Image (tube, rainbow, N blue to C red; front, top):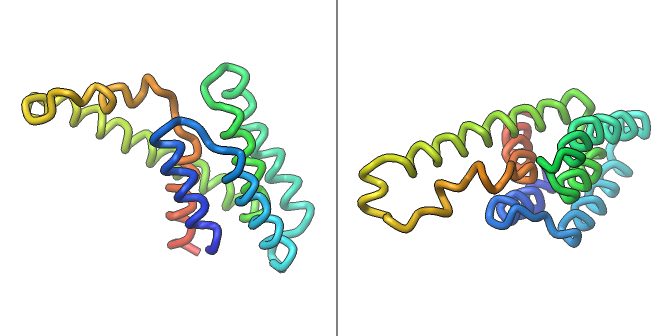
Length: 149
């Protein structure tokens, strides 16, 4: 999938800064629109369903302050890239994998050997306090989906 480098860039930026720049979302949305225009497997009905799925998955988190506006825009930008069930798989696998990764990083940062070798790793131990980087989750899910399909 040609959108993978864009998604990986967004995932990296979101992991580092917990922000998704509008420029990258617009690049992804443009690429996704071109992909949908020339893809025989994606139609307007699938895109409409995916927009609904994206809003259902992100708007409650946005209202509660768990995810940011960039996360909502990202879900709308990726709507044309997959069939509805594939989009749900990208999201679900990505969230599950990301939470496992964040838990592992948190656990490693609490180990005494890690504290002894790297005493100034407070930013790593604050992994959960900084919020959930949904862009990173989508990137992880997209990588997985690119290997499956």
